[in-house]
Length: 194
Image (cartoon, rainbow, N blue to C red; front, top):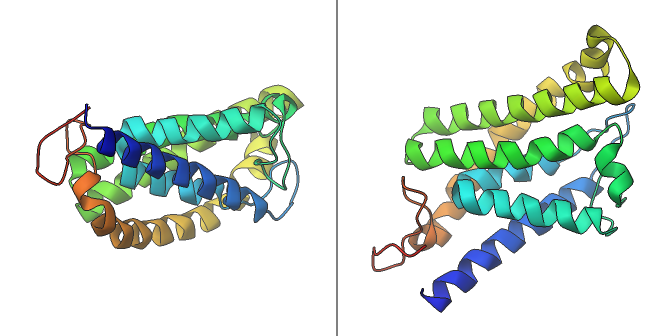
């Protein structure tokens, strides 16, 4: 395995985990679920890193938060956040990152494919988040959707609109080290190394 390529992959995954953490600090509390920028960076991670490395990036983020580092919304951390009302959204990030990456690998940079990837990723976050929020709080489904989904849809649409140009701007900087359709990373010489 190419050590240089492995180090680059780890650096990109760590950078995205750090960006997801930064997105947590930009939180607007509006109820049990705050408005945050974490999901913007989860989508960008999927678009840039592909399924495997985007999921690793989010996994590192979740592990850091579970260990008590203040990387969750509002600068909080700990296992309590993972089992609290917002825990479903946090775990949804993992599934979303993987699926956005998987779809983006097959989209090969096509606009509609990447938009579809982000839309599906956002639905995954909502599915995990709303389901867990309903379970933890005991609210009715309509109430859960009213506090854990509907208020966030316009903002998430804006985040998707921002994520795509970010990914398209950054992608050429890491183009020689981005995933192809098989999920394998291409070195600058075009050979795969996983």
